[in-house]
Length: 338
Length: 106
Image 1 (cartoon, rainbow over the protein chains, first blue to last red):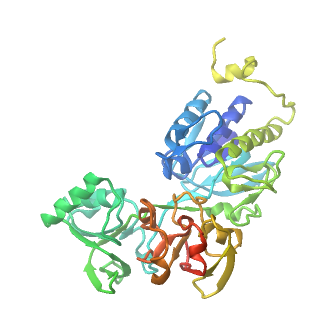
Image 2 (cartoon, rainbow over the protein chains, first blue to last red):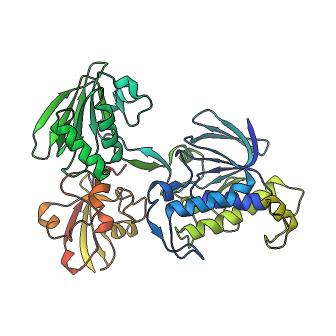
Image 3 (cartoon, one colour):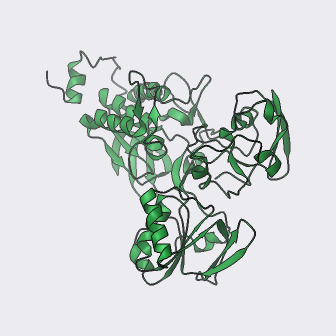
């Protein structure tokens, strides 16, 4: 069990800057995020889009903002736990035991939820029957590509993941790529490659088709697709893969008794604590009168929540505001040499 | 102010007045119309304000900009009549617009 002062749920800009504030005041923290990298929405949804409203930074992209925040918290050596999601919490002797979906356990005095709109998960097929085969022959990500060798695979989607996998798997499998419209949104070089493979008959491409149903008795046998014009085709296949990007789901946090309303957690504006002692919420996920869903508001909320955590983690100490410009203790924590 | 009708998947209809300059998504969110999530807040970065617009109105709407179709690929059950409601900006020309909401957004 990992013992810490604070567990931060969500590694977007708000969670990362909050970690910085915790480091500055001398608290330990661990960060959990369901994505495989730090940065949250900034890195997943708009890494290349310029942001113009970060104080004192006239313009930066989501990627640059994330890189700078990571750089800023480096001195503290905080550990992040990626591709993992918080699952259950339990209160014991005024501390929280938190379990993740991968089975990690934390013992923490405070939890700071900086979860945005929820954790990113793959968007699934709308077809009910797909659930029966999910994880076996209907997949939304690939962990081991060797399972497809000499099998037939139908891939749905029009973005880079769909194209890249169609190209890769066509080497050793019979691949059909199905997309709902004529244009593909992947990299131009991948689109070219797909067209070339299609010409050489190493890859089947069907556009203006969407999934209708999957059939099979225990094992997947075929997939039915429906065209824009109503035409229905049946393709016999061993695997069906869907690459429709990621959606955001709040998940288990909904079950924590935090009075979640419209995907938001109510908090006070003194330290952004929720209705539960030692659980704070900051950034896009929190709600209070006047709340603005801006990154800069998340920074402020994180700074105050960090001081709220101090009260619980150091009950016998009085919090004293120290400036990074003058405080020796703070400079030590930052590893700055005098 | 123009009138816009939002029809939920279950047939429930909501006719509301939306100010010019707002998006069809904002009109829904500000009036608590169920069925529009708008997770990213209007940044064309998710596909959870997805609506269907029947042909008569679809052709009258300002055309999709680059990127909207890419996001729609990631919507729940997209069709050729799909739009992202955050990208439809309300103007006098849209008075009487009818949008149909999908069964769900995620």
